[in-house]
Length: 417
Image (tube, rainbow, N blue to C red; front, side):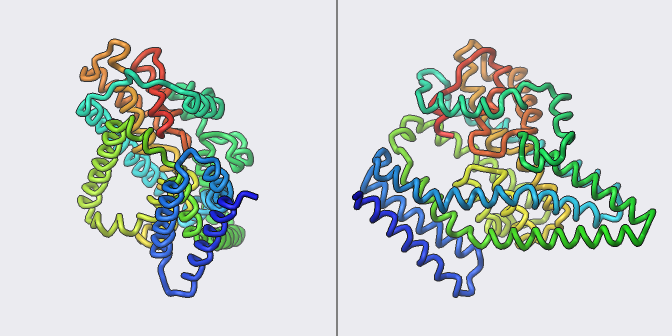
């Protein structure tokens, strides 16, 4: 009998039970998530200190913790498509003016691509500032396995497409297949399908008011039903964060991080700069950056631990509508498009950094203005359709290879991401 494993599971269950007691307190969900985060960090550090990141006992324990952590992520993934479909359908049906749809879509996508362009420039800046190159980074077995898994799932589906083909892939040809998440661009396809249904409902309301009213009532009922489901799953967030943080902290390999120390520092410096850019944009629009980040930090925490933009959509919409007061029509569009277009980190900053690192190894000057302009353009355009799952950044790096010519991946960086 494996007593250390049993002891770890017992302690984890006790922590879950202790966290469950907060339901009797009049605490906000954000405060409960903070408690779960702290508990996960402390428990993870304790496990890491006792066993080390390569211990079989720790690996076996994490498999049990994953029932809660990965189970929560899968529940979020379960509600992504129903939430996107119902929210967009309801939002469009409430516009009462289909012309507003184009304005909302243009502003949302334009903002996402603009910030991605800035993120790519920041990636070029910090990489050149730290003098990072891919020389000496070896692609090992773990990196190769991860890269092969990503390529088998996504390369050929999106990365090999031209820009016109990519745009065409957004248009749904089988909405029921897209509702199952069959393609990397399924979320955008569902958004488009729901938008068309919403516009059709508005047309029906105009041509046949009684039938149109019944359809709008059904849409409102569907939206309310799905949101009840979303809030039910949201109540499990503290437990999911506890399990995910325990896994992340306990399994972190300090030696690997130290080996890539400069890359890690440069990456997080780039992310901090992008947070500052976002704060500046918020300030320009009359929103307090401090208040904003305080209200959305549970979403950021979950996205960091789960490494899944798609799974973060429900939390994203919830934070926008309930904590920031954003109209549902805009919140749904922004969250849905933001999960697959213009991800500043994994679709902007990171691919640009890797491209700059590889450039010197193939005889390209990473300071060449024309090369930088080409890179930034490719990164920005190819940010559309990036996989909203862990590893999506590595997949997007294949698009930027055009700037470097035939080159290998910086293996350690692939594994780190």
